[in-house]
Length: 433
Image (cartoon, rainbow, N blue to C red; front, side, top):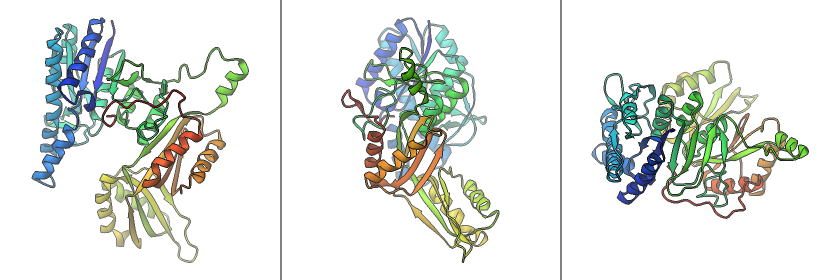
């Protein structure tokens, strides 16, 4: 008997018919002899609809009240799913994040888990029942309801899997697994059978939406095997673990195996439209200036991604510093920098929200300089200009114009022979969350 944690996204429980379909899958898993814990998101676009509703009341809703409002979406789906499972003859009980023992800090809107004490969930499972847990939510030490931010249901599922010592955490979505690119942009994208935590971290951080970044971080920290698959099919999905496992064919001839071992393993191409670029123009090029600028940025609560500093002009002693950050962090960051312009000594700020980021992710890339040349050559041949570049041991990221991003993704995907020969990838519904 295995303990399985299953998470179903909003597109998987978008209406009554979908909830009944998911309930049949859960009941079948239970009847196969497994213990089952389920984490569920709000139905369809409920969270966005609730945010729109709050915006019609006030442009700046109090974060505490907003969290209480948003958590109602998961309460609806968890209770309906418990009803559907019970109707199939399998006992089920639903729990809010608070009831499930998901303890967080007190930061509303993007709380972080500080402890998981799933006593009631464990008791329910031990009684032979299916436990249904509302994703995306928890409770602070002051007993206030909190939300974990976008992708929070993934994090809830992995955290519960770790806390319950589950055998696997299954993340159900509307595609058959993790693909070499977003199949909505690259229909020829190929499903990846197995990917490491590190590669999945880079893909998620670079814009791949199939699995939330914080969930991958949690899975790596507690060594939780994650199986990303579709709730609309029975196809085996993508296993996210600590190793590639069967990445090298054990039956391959010695020469071929050596070639495979030495070749860089390209996992995929990710893209991100959610970032903007700020350029601090005319910065005095002297020690401590950059540090002070980014202290101000950090104080504004911004998460910085890529940074580029130009060589200072010899006749002026001034330089420009550009960095990217999420759109949502831009207003507070611009305001904080403008407020301290005299102290920081820069000439002006430039803001650009029409950028897109493309990232090529794969193991062994750092020791293969030909990878960079191949990537830049493909973008050149497609007539796409590069504005910023960032690298890590397993990732190369570039910033280009937002309206050229889709063409850039397709060009790189083809250049690295990632296109599938098995026809187009299937997107069953929704947006992959």
